[in-house]
View (cartoon, rainbow, N blue to C red):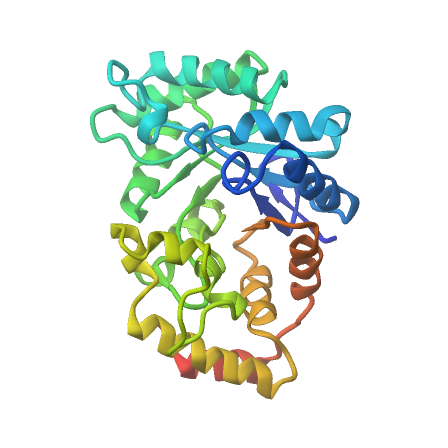
Length: 311
């Protein structure tokens, strides 16, 4: 498995998204997925305090193999922040980190990320609190998620002026289907400030696996069936998304490849991306995702994909 860097951390180019742990997967199934990932060289595990019992199950599954893993978790989102706390405040950052350390059963968080911006807290306060965690040996590297290009620029400026550690990554939605970071300045900011882009929804919740096809019923029990009546389901269940997916499936098959290979390889070959975090609910999905990262796109293939110009 190829490795890249997040600050001083070496991470596998294919990471494992852990939001299924504690939801779709119980402790035994989580352990099977985690150990298969480790056995095949996947070292980067991305979770969050907002993912239910995920931190606890990930920590238990790693057990004595903790030193083989780079553990990334997040703070500051949703129900994980008590009503009387402020997501990005120094007080909550310290409490949230200690809670995640307990949940994971570890002494240090390898990669600690701010799950979403907090407009009520100056970024200097959040960075200062994270610096204290770094200085105390509780955190190794820090990152953010859902930040705009302007927010990243402001963060770098504030960190430089105050002698604080800047975020080494930003985790935003990005895939061959959804090109936001290319158009909103985030990718440019990443290049300018040497910030890694860790894409979430790299497979668009399964659209880029071939699991969902235009004109067919959503598979029973699937994530998108569960989300069909929820607001965030609309991000994926659009006709334009299905049309673009079908075009990419046709193109991949014309090259004797799969849509999964196209989706993961297209991201994995981008130098700005240290790790592509894909979820998995079975050991077989882990091995399939690893194999899918092996397509080295040539210039003609890249151009062909760009001409399709999904969303």
